[in-house]
Image 1 (cartoon, each protein chain N blue to C red):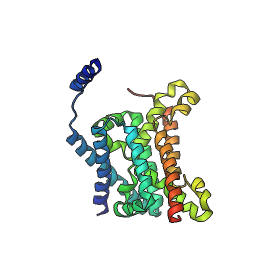
Image 2 (cartoon, chains in turn blue, cyan):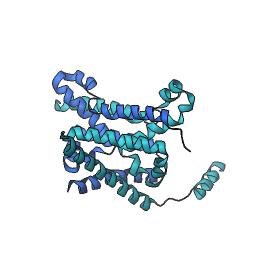
Image 3 (cartoon, chains in turn red, yellow):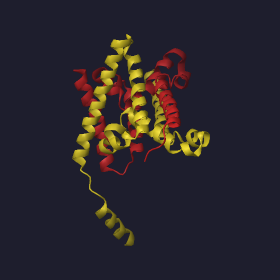
Image 4 (tube, rainbow over the protein chains, first blue to last red):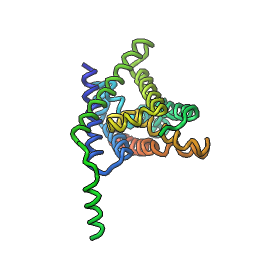
Length: 116
Length: 146
């Protein structure tokens, strides 16, 4: 059942993105930015946590989960150390993704030649 | 007048895209990415006996690695051209943006090329994400107390 939910949610997010891309003059960069901010906003009222419970991995794959993980890590840390946790805990949960992206792209760009 | 004429001419010759087909392809490909993510989480929790949150970290790392590798091998640009937002909105789009910037500027050197330009396309995601997370987090702390 959770597979159907992930298909529906992840597909729905991509559908909205594609509709925005086709019907406006925004670039893919604008659209990913909009979705990250949207993911942050949905976490303010704990809506995104409910979506993750409902859709599982389907809610972790779209870029909205990146914004959600940023604010989620920050809010978890603030319960321990107060308002400074907003800064120190910001990358707690996303660090693995960002580090992976940086390391893989650096190493692979040394190995491969650009193709065009 | 000239501007208007030019705009009309451009509009006439811009190829019309089939919005419905594009949307359907994006929906299906995006949905398959979601299924792949959930499948990887299930496999990792079964294989390594780890919690779901750790497994989803591992899943994100795996998808980023796949995105980087396929971009290097030259498949991903064709796939993005076909599926558009179906592959840009998932986390693979983030990896694709970083990888293609790193590949493109590599000839300008390690520091001035890769180091200075890697975040050229993907930086907006991190910057807007952090700024909006900070602002929304502050609002949530003040209004709802954490």
